[in-house]
Length: 411
Image (cartoon, rainbow, N blue to C red; front, side):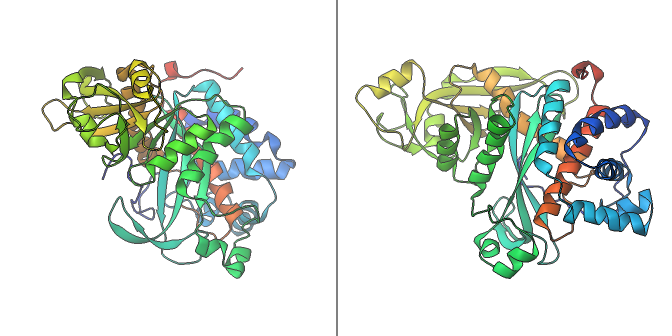
Protein backbone atom coordinates (compact mmCIF):
# COMPACT_ATOMS: atom_id res chain seq x y z
CA UNK A 1 0.00 0.00 0.00
CA UNK A 2 1.37 3.43 -0.90
CA UNK A 3 2.05 6.16 1.64
CA UNK A 4 -1.16 7.89 0.62
CA UNK A 5 -3.40 4.86 0.16
CA UNK A 6 -6.71 5.24 1.99
CA UNK A 7 -6.59 3.87 5.52
CA UNK A 8 -8.12 0.42 5.72
CA UNK A 9 -6.71 -0.98 8.95
CA UNK A 10 -9.43 -2.63 11.07
CA UNK A 11 -10.82 0.13 13.25
CA UNK A 12 -12.35 -2.43 15.58
CA UNK A 13 -9.05 -4.14 16.38
CA UNK A 14 -8.80 -4.91 20.09
CA UNK A 15 -6.06 -3.70 22.34
CA UNK A 16 -5.66 -0.12 21.19
CA UNK A 17 -4.10 1.45 24.25
CA UNK A 18 -5.26 4.55 26.05
CA UNK A 19 -3.43 7.77 25.23
CA UNK A 20 -4.27 9.97 28.21
CA UNK A 21 -1.54 10.56 30.77
CA UNK A 22 -0.23 13.46 32.86
CA UNK A 23 1.70 14.97 29.94
CA UNK A 24 -1.60 15.79 28.25
CA UNK A 25 -3.17 17.80 31.08
CA UNK A 26 -1.67 21.21 30.33
CA UNK A 27 -2.37 21.00 26.60
CA UNK A 28 -5.86 19.62 27.17
CA UNK A 29 -6.71 22.43 29.58
CA UNK A 30 -5.31 25.13 27.31
CA UNK A 31 -6.83 23.76 24.11
CA UNK A 32 -10.20 23.04 25.71
CA UNK A 33 -10.61 26.67 26.74
CA UNK A 34 -9.91 27.78 23.17
CA UNK A 35 -11.97 25.10 21.42
CA UNK A 36 -15.21 25.44 23.31
CA UNK A 37 -15.38 29.22 23.61
CA UNK A 38 -18.05 29.23 20.87
CA UNK A 39 -20.33 26.81 22.72
CA UNK A 40 -23.03 28.93 24.39
CA UNK A 41 -23.77 26.75 27.42
CA UNK A 42 -21.57 25.63 30.28
CA UNK A 43 -22.93 22.06 30.11
CA UNK A 44 -21.93 21.83 26.43
CA UNK A 45 -18.41 22.98 27.24
CA UNK A 46 -18.22 20.44 30.04
CA UNK A 47 -19.43 17.61 27.81
CA UNK A 48 -16.95 18.64 25.13
CA UNK A 49 -14.09 18.32 27.59
CA UNK A 50 -15.43 14.98 28.84
CA UNK A 51 -15.64 13.65 25.30
CA UNK A 52 -12.05 14.75 24.61
CA UNK A 53 -10.86 12.97 27.75
CA UNK A 54 -12.79 9.88 26.72
CA UNK A 55 -11.23 9.85 23.25
CA UNK A 56 -7.80 9.99 24.86
CA UNK A 57 -8.50 7.66 27.76
CA UNK A 58 -10.99 4.98 26.71
CA UNK A 59 -9.69 1.54 25.83
CA UNK A 60 -10.40 0.10 22.39
CA UNK A 61 -12.93 1.59 20.01
CA UNK A 62 -13.85 5.18 20.86
CA UNK A 63 -17.62 4.70 20.86
CA UNK A 64 -19.96 6.82 22.95
CA UNK A 65 -20.59 3.77 25.13
CA UNK A 66 -16.89 3.19 25.84
CA UNK A 67 -16.30 6.87 26.49
CA UNK A 68 -19.26 6.99 28.87
CA UNK A 69 -18.03 3.87 30.67
CA UNK A 70 -14.78 5.68 31.40
CA UNK A 71 -16.53 8.84 32.57
CA UNK A 72 -19.69 7.81 34.36
CA UNK A 73 -22.19 5.21 33.21
CA UNK A 74 -25.55 5.04 31.45
CA UNK A 75 -26.77 8.57 32.20
CA UNK A 76 -23.51 9.92 30.83
CA UNK A 77 -23.89 7.74 27.73
CA UNK A 78 -27.31 9.23 26.99
CA UNK A 79 -26.04 12.76 27.55
CA UNK A 80 -22.98 12.28 25.36
CA UNK A 81 -25.02 10.63 22.60
CA UNK A 82 -27.30 13.67 22.54
CA UNK A 83 -24.32 16.02 22.67
CA UNK A 84 -22.76 14.42 19.59
CA UNK A 85 -25.74 13.38 17.48
CA UNK A 86 -28.64 15.65 18.37
CA UNK A 87 -27.33 18.82 19.98
CA UNK A 88 -27.30 22.16 18.16
CA UNK A 89 -23.68 23.26 18.57
CA UNK A 90 -21.85 24.17 15.39
CA UNK A 91 -18.61 22.32 14.66
CA UNK A 92 -17.23 24.94 12.26
CA UNK A 93 -16.15 27.48 14.93
CA UNK A 94 -14.60 24.64 16.93
CA UNK A 95 -12.55 23.52 13.92
CA UNK A 96 -11.54 27.10 13.16
CA UNK A 97 -10.39 27.58 16.76
CA UNK A 98 -8.40 24.32 16.57
CA UNK A 99 -6.72 25.37 13.31
CA UNK A 100 -5.76 28.81 14.65
CA UNK A 101 -4.43 27.29 17.88
CA UNK A 102 -2.28 24.81 15.95
CA UNK A 103 -0.99 27.52 13.66
CA UNK A 104 0.20 29.39 16.77
CA UNK A 105 1.88 26.48 18.56
CA UNK A 106 3.06 24.35 15.62
CA UNK A 107 3.14 26.49 12.45
CA UNK A 108 2.35 24.37 9.37
CA UNK A 109 4.39 24.29 6.19
CA UNK A 110 1.47 23.04 4.08
CA UNK A 111 -2.13 21.91 4.08
CA UNK A 112 -2.05 18.19 3.31
CA UNK A 113 -5.25 16.71 1.91
CA UNK A 114 -5.84 13.07 2.74
CA UNK A 115 -8.51 10.71 1.50
CA UNK A 116 -9.75 8.41 4.27
CA UNK A 117 -11.78 5.22 3.75
CA UNK A 118 -13.85 4.04 6.72
CA UNK A 119 -15.04 0.41 6.38
CA UNK A 120 -18.47 -0.30 7.85
CA UNK A 121 -20.35 -3.52 8.56
CA UNK A 122 -23.90 -2.24 7.95
CA UNK A 123 -25.71 0.02 5.53
CA UNK A 124 -27.16 2.68 7.85
CA UNK A 125 -24.09 4.77 8.75
CA UNK A 126 -24.36 8.12 7.01
CA UNK A 127 -22.66 8.10 3.61
CA UNK A 128 -21.85 4.38 3.55
CA UNK A 129 -21.85 2.76 0.11
CA UNK A 130 -20.62 -0.45 -1.41
CA UNK A 131 -17.93 0.83 -3.74
CA UNK A 132 -14.74 -0.09 -5.52
CA UNK A 133 -11.66 1.36 -3.80
CA UNK A 134 -9.10 1.52 -6.58
CA UNK A 135 -6.07 1.96 -4.32
CA UNK A 136 -6.58 -1.50 -2.83
CA UNK A 137 -8.41 -3.12 -5.74
CA UNK A 138 -11.38 -4.19 -3.60
CA UNK A 139 -15.08 -3.54 -3.33
CA UNK A 140 -15.77 -2.35 0.21
CA UNK A 141 -18.76 -1.27 2.22
CA UNK A 142 -17.39 2.04 3.43
CA UNK A 143 -17.63 5.77 3.97
CA UNK A 144 -15.21 8.08 2.18
CA UNK A 145 -14.00 11.29 3.76
CA UNK A 146 -11.48 13.99 2.95
CA UNK A 147 -9.36 15.50 5.71
CA UNK A 148 -7.20 18.62 5.63
CA UNK A 149 -4.13 18.42 7.85
CA UNK A 150 -1.95 21.15 9.29
CA UNK A 151 1.46 19.63 8.56
CA UNK A 152 5.14 20.24 9.11
CA UNK A 153 8.13 17.91 9.08
CA UNK A 154 7.73 17.47 12.85
CA UNK A 155 4.01 16.96 13.36
CA UNK A 156 0.67 16.87 11.53
CA UNK A 157 -2.90 17.25 12.78
CA UNK A 158 -6.30 17.23 11.03
CA UNK A 159 -8.24 20.50 11.11
CA UNK A 160 -11.10 20.19 8.61
CA UNK A 161 -13.23 17.45 7.05
CA UNK A 162 -15.70 16.65 4.32
CA UNK A 163 -17.81 13.48 4.21
CA UNK A 164 -18.40 12.38 0.63
CA UNK A 165 -22.04 11.60 -0.10
CA UNK A 166 -23.08 9.80 -3.28
CA UNK A 167 -26.12 10.64 -5.36
CA UNK A 168 -27.70 7.45 -4.04
CA UNK A 169 -27.66 9.02 -0.58
CA UNK A 170 -28.58 12.54 -1.60
CA UNK A 171 -31.49 11.46 -3.82
CA UNK A 172 -32.96 9.02 -1.25
CA UNK A 173 -35.36 11.34 0.60
CA UNK A 174 -36.25 9.01 3.54
CA UNK A 175 -32.62 8.02 4.17
CA UNK A 176 -31.45 11.60 3.81
CA UNK A 177 -34.07 12.74 6.31
CA UNK A 178 -33.16 10.00 8.79
CA UNK A 179 -29.50 11.07 8.69
CA UNK A 180 -30.48 14.77 9.00
CA UNK A 181 -28.41 15.72 5.96
CA UNK A 182 -28.89 19.49 5.46
CA UNK A 183 -30.55 20.72 2.27
CA UNK A 184 -27.40 22.76 1.55
CA UNK A 185 -25.37 19.56 1.02
CA UNK A 186 -25.31 18.76 -2.69
CA UNK A 187 -23.46 16.30 -4.89
CA UNK A 188 -19.68 16.83 -4.84
CA UNK A 189 -16.77 14.85 -6.22
CA UNK A 190 -13.82 14.02 -3.97
CA UNK A 191 -11.85 16.71 -5.81
CA UNK A 192 -14.59 19.25 -5.01
CA UNK A 193 -14.62 18.17 -1.35
CA UNK A 194 -10.86 18.58 -1.06
CA UNK A 195 -10.66 22.06 -2.56
CA UNK A 196 -13.72 23.32 -0.69
CA UNK A 197 -12.30 22.10 2.63
CA UNK A 198 -9.02 23.95 2.05
CA UNK A 199 -10.77 27.07 0.76
CA UNK A 200 -12.81 27.21 3.97
CA UNK A 201 -9.56 27.47 5.92
CA UNK A 202 -8.19 30.36 3.90
CA UNK A 203 -11.32 32.27 2.88
CA UNK A 204 -13.64 31.77 5.86
CA UNK A 205 -11.27 31.16 8.75
CA UNK A 206 -8.60 33.62 7.55
CA UNK A 207 -5.75 31.15 7.81
CA UNK A 208 -2.69 31.62 5.57
CA UNK A 209 -2.59 30.35 2.02
CA UNK A 210 -0.07 27.50 2.07
CA UNK A 211 0.86 24.86 -0.50
CA UNK A 212 -1.80 22.16 -0.84
CA UNK A 213 -0.08 18.78 -0.87
CA UNK A 214 -2.30 15.98 -2.17
CA UNK A 215 -2.23 12.60 -3.87
CA UNK A 216 -4.47 12.66 -6.96
CA UNK A 217 -3.29 9.46 -8.63
CA UNK A 218 -6.66 7.77 -8.07
CA UNK A 219 -8.64 10.96 -8.72
CA UNK A 220 -9.16 13.21 -11.74
CA UNK A 221 -5.78 14.94 -11.73
CA UNK A 222 -6.68 17.46 -14.44
CA UNK A 223 -9.84 18.47 -12.56
CA UNK A 224 -7.90 18.86 -9.29
CA UNK A 225 -5.41 21.18 -11.01
CA UNK A 226 -8.21 23.30 -12.50
CA UNK A 227 -10.08 23.58 -9.19
CA UNK A 228 -6.97 24.55 -7.23
CA UNK A 229 -5.97 27.13 -9.81
CA UNK A 230 -9.47 28.62 -9.82
CA UNK A 231 -9.36 28.87 -6.01
CA UNK A 232 -5.94 30.54 -6.07
CA UNK A 233 -4.37 27.75 -4.03
CA UNK A 234 -0.74 26.77 -4.70
CA UNK A 235 -0.28 23.02 -4.97
CA UNK A 236 2.12 20.08 -4.97
CA UNK A 237 0.23 17.07 -6.36
CA UNK A 238 1.33 13.45 -6.65
CA UNK A 239 0.05 12.49 -10.07
CA UNK A 240 -0.51 9.35 -12.11
CA UNK A 241 2.16 8.61 -14.70
CA UNK A 242 -0.55 8.70 -17.38
CA UNK A 243 -1.65 12.31 -16.72
CA UNK A 244 -1.43 14.20 -20.01
CA UNK A 245 0.82 17.30 -20.07
CA UNK A 246 2.53 19.51 -22.64
CA UNK A 247 6.33 19.58 -22.39
CA UNK A 248 8.16 22.87 -22.59
CA UNK A 249 10.22 23.56 -25.67
CA UNK A 250 13.71 22.16 -25.31
CA UNK A 251 12.71 18.94 -23.51
CA UNK A 252 14.25 16.47 -25.92
CA UNK A 253 13.42 12.77 -26.16
CA UNK A 254 9.66 12.97 -25.56
CA UNK A 255 8.79 12.65 -29.22
CA UNK A 256 6.38 15.56 -28.84
CA UNK A 257 6.30 19.18 -29.89
CA UNK A 258 5.53 21.98 -27.48
CA UNK A 259 1.86 21.88 -28.51
CA UNK A 260 1.36 18.11 -28.23
CA UNK A 261 0.14 16.41 -25.05
CA UNK A 262 1.95 13.28 -23.83
CA UNK A 263 1.81 11.17 -20.65
CA UNK A 264 3.83 12.56 -17.76
CA UNK A 265 6.07 9.49 -17.59
CA UNK A 266 7.34 10.13 -21.13
CA UNK A 267 8.39 13.64 -20.21
CA UNK A 268 10.07 12.49 -16.99
CA UNK A 269 11.86 9.61 -18.67
CA UNK A 270 13.44 11.97 -21.16
CA UNK A 271 15.36 14.07 -18.63
CA UNK A 272 17.00 11.61 -16.27
CA UNK A 273 20.19 13.60 -16.83
CA UNK A 274 18.66 16.51 -14.89
CA UNK A 275 18.46 14.58 -11.64
CA UNK A 276 20.16 15.91 -8.53
CA UNK A 277 20.80 14.28 -5.14
CA UNK A 278 18.77 15.73 -2.25
CA UNK A 279 19.42 14.96 1.42
CA UNK A 280 16.40 14.79 3.69
CA UNK A 281 15.31 13.50 7.08
CA UNK A 282 13.39 10.22 6.86
CA UNK A 283 11.81 9.44 10.27
CA UNK A 284 11.63 5.75 9.34
CA UNK A 285 15.37 5.60 8.73
CA UNK A 286 17.96 5.13 11.44
CA UNK A 287 21.26 6.91 11.28
CA UNK A 288 22.05 9.89 9.09
CA UNK A 289 19.94 11.69 6.50
CA UNK A 290 18.36 9.83 3.60
CA UNK A 291 19.09 10.72 -0.02
CA UNK A 292 16.77 10.97 -3.00
CA UNK A 293 17.10 11.81 -6.67
CA UNK A 294 15.02 14.78 -7.77
CA UNK A 295 14.59 16.32 -11.22
CA UNK A 296 12.23 18.95 -12.59
CA UNK A 297 11.10 20.34 -15.94
CA UNK A 298 8.57 22.98 -16.93
CA UNK A 299 5.30 21.81 -18.47
CA UNK A 300 1.77 23.00 -19.21
CA UNK A 301 -1.54 21.40 -18.36
CA UNK A 302 -3.17 19.61 -21.27
CA UNK A 303 -6.12 22.00 -21.21
CA UNK A 304 -4.07 25.20 -21.29
CA UNK A 305 -4.49 27.14 -24.53
CA UNK A 306 -1.61 27.01 -27.00
CA UNK A 307 -0.48 30.45 -28.12
CA UNK A 308 2.42 31.59 -30.24
CA UNK A 309 5.57 31.85 -28.17
CA UNK A 310 3.98 30.17 -25.12
CA UNK A 311 6.49 27.31 -25.06
CA UNK A 312 9.45 29.72 -25.17
CA UNK A 313 8.01 31.83 -22.35
CA UNK A 314 7.31 28.68 -20.34
CA UNK A 315 10.88 27.50 -20.72
CA UNK A 316 12.06 30.81 -19.24
CA UNK A 317 9.79 30.64 -16.19
CA UNK A 318 6.22 30.37 -14.90
CA UNK A 319 3.64 27.70 -15.65
CA UNK A 320 3.81 24.28 -14.02
CA UNK A 321 6.72 22.15 -12.93
CA UNK A 322 6.82 18.37 -13.31
CA UNK A 323 8.89 16.88 -10.52
CA UNK A 324 10.32 13.38 -10.69
CA UNK A 325 11.63 11.66 -7.58
CA UNK A 326 13.39 8.37 -6.96
CA UNK A 327 15.96 6.47 -4.97
CA UNK A 328 19.55 6.01 -6.20
CA UNK A 329 19.96 2.62 -7.86
CA UNK A 330 16.24 2.10 -8.59
CA UNK A 331 14.02 2.77 -11.59
CA UNK A 332 13.38 6.36 -12.58
CA UNK A 333 11.07 8.00 -11.72
CA UNK A 334 9.42 6.29 -8.77
CA UNK A 335 6.97 9.15 -8.23
CA UNK A 336 5.75 12.10 -10.27
CA UNK A 337 4.56 15.41 -8.84
CA UNK A 338 3.00 18.47 -10.45
CA UNK A 339 3.23 21.93 -8.92
CA UNK A 340 2.61 25.55 -9.77
CA UNK A 341 5.36 26.62 -7.34
CA UNK A 342 7.75 26.75 -10.26
CA UNK A 343 10.11 29.25 -8.62
CA UNK A 344 10.90 27.03 -5.64
CA UNK A 345 14.05 24.87 -5.77
CA UNK A 346 13.33 21.18 -6.53
CA UNK A 347 14.84 20.17 -3.18
CA UNK A 348 12.32 22.33 -1.31
CA UNK A 349 9.46 20.95 -3.40
CA UNK A 350 10.60 17.42 -2.63
CA UNK A 351 10.57 18.11 1.11
CA UNK A 352 7.04 19.49 0.83
CA UNK A 353 5.97 16.33 -0.99
CA UNK A 354 7.23 14.20 1.88
CA UNK A 355 4.66 15.74 4.23
CA UNK A 356 2.19 13.16 2.88
CA UNK A 357 4.30 10.52 4.62
CA UNK A 358 4.24 12.56 7.84
CA UNK A 359 0.42 12.58 7.74
CA UNK A 360 0.29 8.87 6.95
CA UNK A 361 2.40 8.02 10.01
CA UNK A 362 0.49 10.32 12.33
CA UNK A 363 -2.83 8.90 11.15
CA UNK A 364 -1.79 5.36 11.98
CA UNK A 365 0.01 6.18 15.23
CA UNK A 366 -2.39 8.80 16.64
CA UNK A 367 -5.59 9.57 14.69
CA UNK A 368 -6.82 6.00 14.54
CA UNK A 369 -6.09 5.63 18.27
CA UNK A 370 -8.09 8.77 19.08
CA UNK A 371 -11.09 7.36 17.23
CA UNK A 372 -11.31 9.46 14.08
CA UNK A 373 -12.96 6.52 12.24
CA UNK A 374 -14.99 5.21 15.19
CA UNK A 375 -18.28 7.09 14.88
CA UNK A 376 -21.04 4.47 14.66
CA UNK A 377 -24.13 6.68 14.49
CA UNK A 378 -26.39 7.52 11.55
CA UNK A 379 -26.36 11.30 11.91
CA UNK A 380 -24.55 13.59 9.44
CA UNK A 381 -24.12 16.20 12.17
CA UNK A 382 -23.00 13.53 14.62
CA UNK A 383 -20.28 12.34 12.24
CA UNK A 384 -18.94 15.87 11.86
CA UNK A 385 -19.01 16.60 15.59
CA UNK A 386 -17.25 13.33 16.38
CA UNK A 387 -14.43 13.81 13.85
CA UNK A 388 -14.01 17.41 15.04
CA UNK A 389 -13.41 16.29 18.63
CA UNK A 390 -11.33 13.31 17.49
CA UNK A 391 -9.14 15.80 15.59
CA UNK A 392 -8.74 17.84 18.76
CA UNK A 393 -7.84 14.71 20.72
CA UNK A 394 -5.27 13.89 18.03
CA UNK A 395 -3.80 17.37 18.49
CA UNK A 396 -3.50 16.91 22.26
CA UNK A 397 -1.73 13.57 21.84
CA UNK A 398 0.52 14.80 19.03
CA UNK A 399 1.61 17.97 20.79
CA UNK A 400 2.22 16.14 24.07
CA UNK A 401 4.65 13.80 22.31
CA UNK A 402 6.37 16.39 20.13
CA UNK A 403 9.76 17.75 21.06
CA UNK A 404 9.00 20.95 22.97
CA UNK A 405 11.59 22.86 20.96
CA UNK A 406 9.33 22.68 17.88
CA UNK A 407 6.33 24.20 19.65
CA UNK A 408 5.38 27.74 20.50
CA UNK A 409 3.30 28.65 23.51
CA UNK A 410 0.01 30.50 23.13
CA UNK A 411 0.18 33.83 24.94
